[in-house]
Length: 266
Image (cartoon, rainbow, N blue to C red):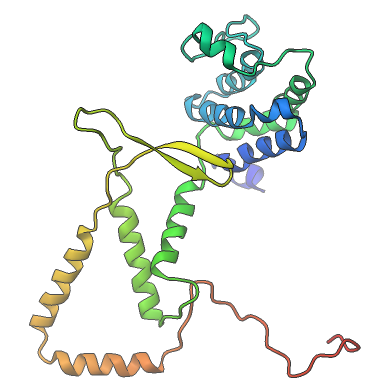
């Protein structure tokens, strides 16, 4: 339907799901030699997707170049645009400490099947824009801080809290990476459940909550300008008491039966 009726719309896949699928296939092999490369291969795929500049051929050549890198070969001629690794040359000590594979290893054959999988390569045609739902998942996580799922709120309070969460997100979406007094970028170690260990992440500058002060100033100004604030508050409190409350994960749910029997299934 999308291909036939909406030809002007460019369809893109979520990068996170593609990377997750590659990582899952590598872990399913249960190969100890390949397991040491799982994180590096998944990071390499993210890197390829984010640096291909919309070029499908460059993306695929960058991705398949991992088959050269993993056997300690960093220059080759079997490509059009990607003819060598983009990392800095390894020192002798660093190069000797890495768990390189060989073409004859079973782990290399398994990785080759994953990297050259026809379905995966076809999907790469639809990920050149680097689109993923990370930002959406971040704001959904922020919603639960302002609207905990285990508490109930009136509709007005519910919507107000969601707006506060949106203001918090928008006010801090462009936080820059923190720097030392000498101007060096700062990083931190953070535990990652999917990675199963600590990963290095950029340390952001502290969040700003100045928008809260602006809201408070607006509330005070409205209170001072109201002719009869006490009557307005009393009326608002009276209407709130009559309203039905809801939660972030509100649903009809199941009605608890008065009697259960293992012989009757209704």
